[in-house]
Length: 367
Image 1 (cartoon, rainbow, N blue to C red):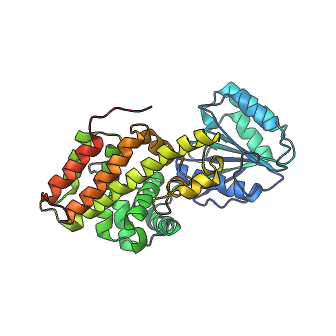
Image 2 (image 1 turned 180 degrees about the vertical axis):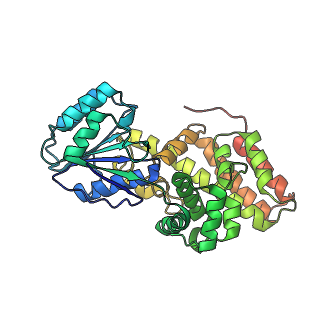
Image 3 (image 1 turned 45 degrees about the horizontal axis):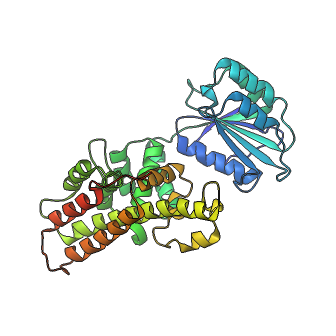
């Protein structure tokens, strides 16, 4: 069994050894490695060429059935079996036996958590098959200066420039977990926008330590209609004397959240009306996709991030179409109020607090 320890998602698969085990605590690296393997083997993540099953959702019988199935639509296939270390010893032994009978053109990617030392965290029977027919890769998080370098490279992937000093500040605030760092970088990229380069001030505004709240905590609390929590976070984010430069970025993020929630609400309804099935843009007619705005586009926001898709859909279920329309109008009116374009003149803190109350207000919950 070829075993490697690295931080790279660029793995080259030997066709004569089509079984790959990816393991470690850095889920972000594992996901990227899976995408790299799919790109190498079949070119795209389509429903005919790629199948993904999870131990928590699919039993070993379903996994074995998928390994032995044949697709007329794809000569090369990738079968991804996630969290195989959660199968019991007997199930892993059954899976190992099935892996010895793979058909031509099938690449199998297994994933597992962190093991003890460099030993893959799977049972002996499965390790034996991987040693004989495949390869194992432990995807480990970088340390020290290499971690700062990884943060800067990850930011570059998101279209964001970080200086060495700003990257170090990000690590200092967010910690060394790669999944957390990648998530915070995504937030930074959204916050910085077309400006392109993040500053230490941006890190302070967006990235939270375990004891702090961020703008993203605020908009998620509003999306969940948790008024008390949202007001508490809002006041922790605002300085004692609130100026327009403090209020407008917060309002901008609230507006972005509700545009995405609105799209998450509209897309499933449009699918239902058109008779479409499935998930993602591929399941939605081109006409529906073209109706969505280019800025704060739902499909761009959730690209490669299933958890964001689930989050926005969950929040969308808490609002009717009418409530979302009123929310967007309230955000527009708040923007005018903050800029002094309305008759009623309140201080900016109160204006934002009133908006939060309106958005989270006690209204009927939809299903």
